[in-house]
Image 1 (tube, helix red, strand yellow):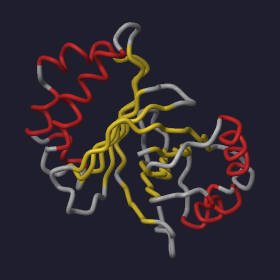
Image 2 (image 1 turned 180 degrees about the horizontal axis):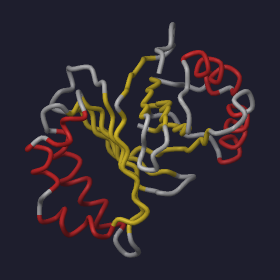
Image 3 (image 1 turned 30 degrees about the vertical axis):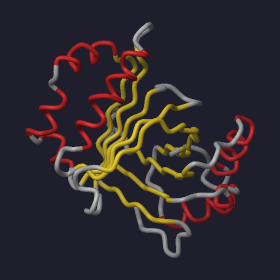
Length: 209
């Protein structure tokens, strides 16, 4: 499933999101779902919001259109938001797919030179399927960021951030293949989002994030 990602270094209100979708023209795209994730304190100690605009199997905008959408989105906000195109690679329902997710976890990284193929196999064959089957994981996805590094983008919808410390989650992370691959992550960003909500389009009343 392809998606657009808007990263913001400040909290986005429901009104700002609704106005941004309309003013930028992004709301006219064939959006399937809009998902909000927010933390008061990312790895750099600052607030961070992820706004995912899920496109399903629809194609991604061109590079030029991406720039126009980004400029239009930022205009009423005075900047501070960055738009990326995410090409979907793997999208898995989790062991708790029938439960509403209220937290979110994103891992962004650039594979070390010569390790992209190995890391892709590890994600596809072991890591993402393994984490998806952990109780408390609602959904697991891997995508490629076409516009801003880090390039590899994995994200998980969770019933609670406590899932990240559960024995089942840690067991998946501590395999021999994981120990082989993880040292070859570079420029890695790991973000735990305490707040998360997902809404099927069209949005009648966007939630307050």
